Amino acid sequence: MNTTEFAKALATRTDMSVAEATNVTKHFLDLLKEGVNKGERIAFLGFGTFSVARRPARTGVNPRNPTQKVKIPARNVVRFTPGSSLKEAANGKFKPLAAAKAAEKKVVATAKKDVKKATTAAKRTTAKAKATAKTATKKAAPKKRK
Image (cartoon, rainbow, N blue to C red; front, side):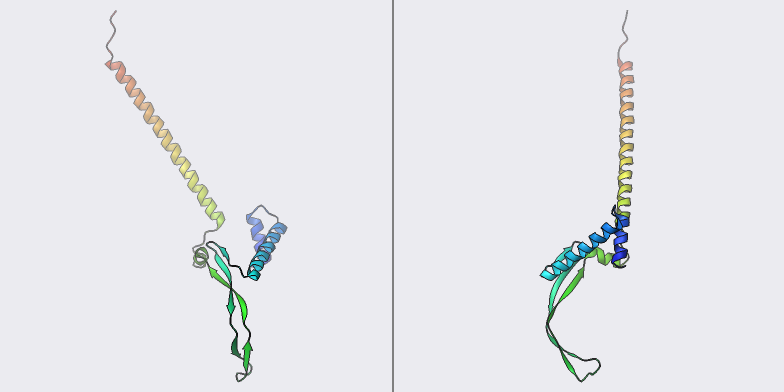
């Protein structure tokens, strides 16, 4: 998936136009670059962490001429450490946000049905108890004499 495809997918899942999603994607990537440029650690809980590490200078070998040694200067590199949900996604245990929302709605709907059933059952039980008490009161009360 490239940046354009990502922006289109983002627009499809949200109430944004493709142009707005593209703009959001560009600004997101720009903020990442800005943080890395400052040497900041950028962490997205569950997704992963971007950090800057210093790679020291070293001596390498020219692949075209293995007898020639080449000095490789020290430099900063970007490291990415994947988070738990990203690792799970790589192993096939990924649930898209849309699926999670649908599952949540299903759970809420089931809970509402359960509450309604319990409420109806409680009303029936109360009504039966009242009827039984009323009948018992009528039978237990002595008859009035004229």
